[in-house]
Image (cartoon, rainbow, N blue to C red):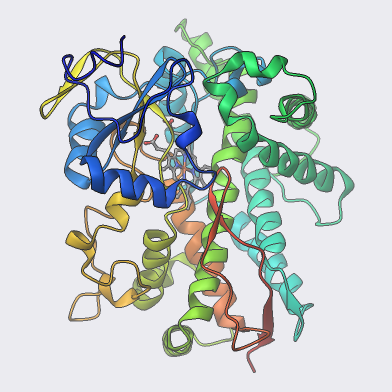
Length: 479
Ligand code: HEM
């Protein structure tokens, strides 16, 4: 009855027939990108779906995304409570899947720590450079071989988050590191299968673990324990003065901010549980997104052969091959930056952002979006919009990000990190990693297709980020 009265209540249109109780869940594909694109074309910038009793509104197009996430940010900035919150068992904690006072304070404190580490004093830069040095060495050992590079990139971006969190990187064959990465990978593997439980929690009681809920629980607990160990080790070394890693690490910085607040008699939500959850958030938000983008860049390059030659020419001209690239070189490498932007635009690794929830009834255009509606910001629709990027929007064409004088063109519609009050907290961090990884990789190597007639597939796999399908690449050291 509620759905039938929808038009009277001015809800956005629904593209498919809504079944009683389950709503539209059976109409959604495993890899929903094409489908959402078709529904956007059919219904316009706002359309609704019903997942069980949850009302979902997909917001597409730059102007509507700006209106909702930027102009009406406070009405669109909450998050839904997801099954993973229940699994982790720390209540409403951390940043990514949290709202209210805890989210607000943690977003502010984390931004502050990022600023100190990454932009102001660049305390963190040497750690990224150190990791990249080992990464390049590992690739050099694969010289001439056809390898699945995704594993190396993922391991390395995972190590960078470790470095940031605990103050040191781990050897790739360190057992504890291997265990952490393995557990986390299994956790991610299960997380997409449990997505239906976000809307139909009773499904977790079905026998047979069809939705991998119990497996998710097991891997999450294992990973959580690993993070607890990390925290204890860093805190122990802070207490005893024994060197564990570098003094500049997130755990110590967070604890000192907490102590400072307590010392000054301020109320704070900074706590052990929130620290734990925030660290888990960094691994969730900051590993697969970056490594998938690097892998996509290689895939586009193998599918568009002239691009790599131009990157090599620019690197040789501006940096040479003797010294490693640094962040200061970024301004001298506009073509590489354009390639990175074009990769992010086309790959759109987080195509529907992270779900938001409305905090009150709100009107957008002619439509009413009730309080508590789950919002999917369709970033894909903006990043692939031919009205913004031209008729060749679905092709890889880095020059679209260059001005006539060769400098980088910055467009406000370039929103792979989303926009508004929830915009990706690690944006600067990620941009720094992408630049340093790719500059170092292309400086040292030429990447080739093992079979020149068969470049890697451009199809994606839907996980936390949109990942490329497994592919092999031949690594050739540039002489
Ligand atoms: C949130 C994209 C890397 C930390 C997000 C969101 C997107 C995104 C689309 C959701 C924003 C929204 O809700 O509207 C990306 C992409 C990355 C990347 C494309 C890499 C290419 C990172 C890294 C970190 C990070 C390296 C940190 C180490 C976060 C956090 C949030 C977030 C903490 C939650 C912000 C909040 O809820 O207030 N990211 N991200 N991300 N990202 Fe990233």
